[in-house]
Length: 109
Image 1 (tube, rainbow, N blue to C red):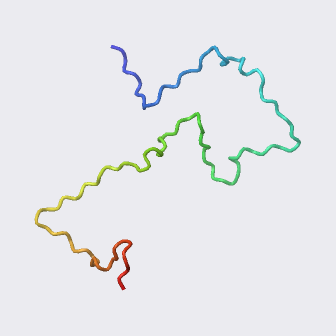
Image 2: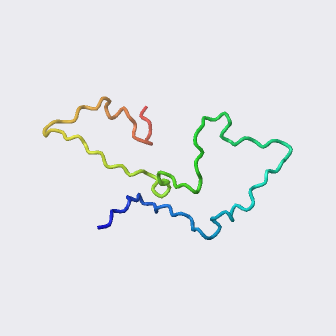
Image 3: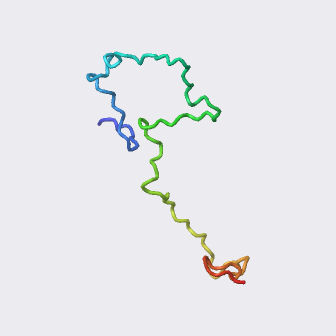
């Protein structure tokens, strides 16, 4: 019996890049030349007065949570009401209903 596959959480296993096309030392033919612009280049954005947060990797890494654009509201399980023993009446509300105007209705004066 073959061993069970590693539990995949919905995302495909990262495959190593193909050995032939441009993955070898040939792809690193020309390193980026350091161009002297006269003025020193700005430090990377992380070294400003901001609190050091890891920069979000855009594109390559998939976000841990899927973006909530398709389902704007998170689906919550319906809250179960506490079971009331039979024959008991709900406690009287602290404020009588008339004190609160109906939503959008004319204010009682």
